[in-house]
Image (cartoon, rainbow, N blue to C red; front, side, top):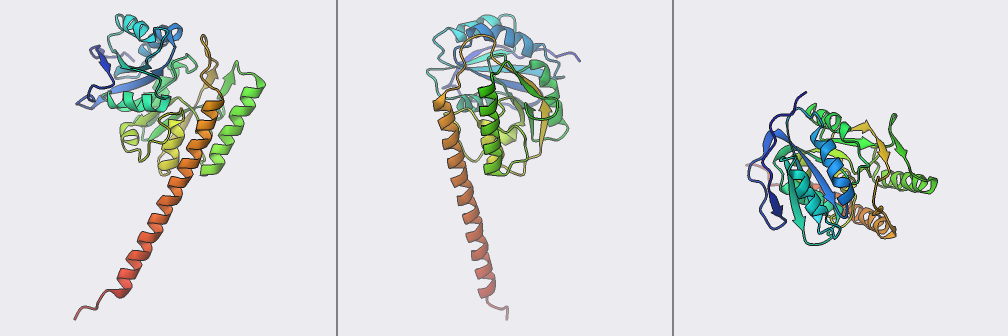
Length: 278
């Protein structure tokens, strides 16, 4: 399936306003980056080659990478005019980068994926197709049949499984991989997100699922490959932020339930005390 003509390239900053017109004919891929100079060019080649059956734009949101990632994106954009760069002045968080990129994008389907080649761009058409078929979210899942991990040592595998199980148990999620960083969304799912707790962290998908439990979600198996080059961003600080996110989301859900219960009691009280019509 051929890809139609690309969108014009331009470099924008985080201070620029959002793109004015949303198009159902465009798929927007958001790639947050920090120090991914060695990986970004082959990643953009792979994304732009993905047959998504629509105009494709790639919005790279770079958090002031000192290794020159922004310059590498501009260089790659000479071959891929559908690539745009959002340059932010400092490291501000992966989830906020995805939301920033979505605000500058024009597609009615928004895909987030990592910038380190750990996500296979050939899966993009499958994720997009699931959203087109009616899903609100399509997740590239490591933990459904056919999915897996490649290149991870045993301690990282066990740690990932433990945190995934914990997140599922805390929020009662049936989704097998709520911590995935590779997912396609109906645009309204992101624009309607009621909280922004994960902005400084890296688990936007968990926040989406925990705050919007009625979403129709599909999981597509992927093999997650450890980064080709560079150093992993995962450290104890990131894990601590995940636990903090879970705590804040739990508090938010409790408050929402209390508000609904109070509203139901108030409506019941008004009904019981309403004067009879004469």
